[in-house]
Length: 430
Image (cartoon, rainbow, N blue to C red; front, top):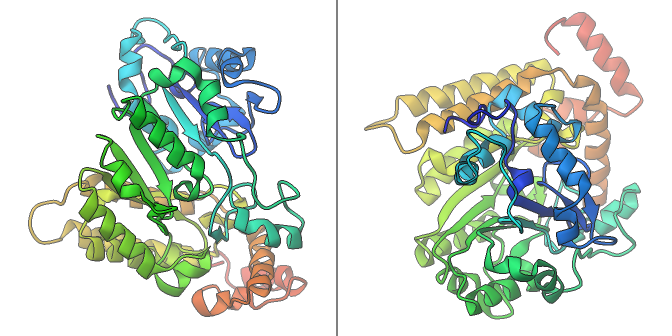
């Protein structure tokens, strides 16, 4: 198979996920994947199997077979246009066996009786409240969400299932067929349901199931149970450790983050589970792109990993945190700094490190995404939210983001006028 854009004789833009994957959000929403905007059903009025066989999901499959782009899938197509990467392309590569299994190079793929893969969000339970996150994905966000008038429920923790038995009962015999389970949240390593499900899989002899995680790696045990002891029993474990910056900036962007704790848990993972595939997931936003090179170099230096272990993707929502909102002067500074990083990567000593080519493509994609659109009209929203969260959290973004400090210090009323004036005096510069 190629890069996933053209899949056999299937239309360009095809995605395998509606045929094999079921995403379950903290709110109970059921959809083909975590990037899909909307839902095909909800646990409040549907079972997992009813959603899998629903007309709504059948319509999505039909649209992909007919080559009709879906508005609900705009996130993938947006990233592909600028970065050349997306969940769609990654999934077509990862699950290429399913396309071939159903003879999709000649005919349309047929969905299995049950999903082959699950993307589980048992709850929004989390010990972080990242700036670009919200209450729907983090219980810690509840108090700040109330303060700014955006909450998902009238309590901090939101659960998609009553308990793990509820999930297992709904999956039914499908638990014997599942091949891949992706855990996110919230923070999955804090969730009792996650540990109970692993114990159930071990009891059923299903340690052949591939386990994938998006985790902040701030914890490595739950009620005395080491996650490493459990992972040792599974042949295929993939951990994406979320990290957006080092030091004080990292703690500001991802409130609750501590680099020393993160580093200690990563080193423990490498020591206890050397079979696990470890990657570092970096969400690139207006908050951290200026310091992106520093972070990438720190990851490679401290954890002795190849560039291929660093997975970059541009934040898309909320729009006012996108790198595309940044002033032109900052964009040019970032572009120059990342170009220098790429040059140093290419000129490094010895043979090309593993994954360097793909890593370089990602970095170029980050630059292209930032410069691909001018969303400076959203910058005022960024300023307002930054000022408000600074006040709520007793933090000072200006001290940690000196390149943006002049803008963050402006009042809401003065900002639009000063920005217009700057554009008149320095056309093309801001």
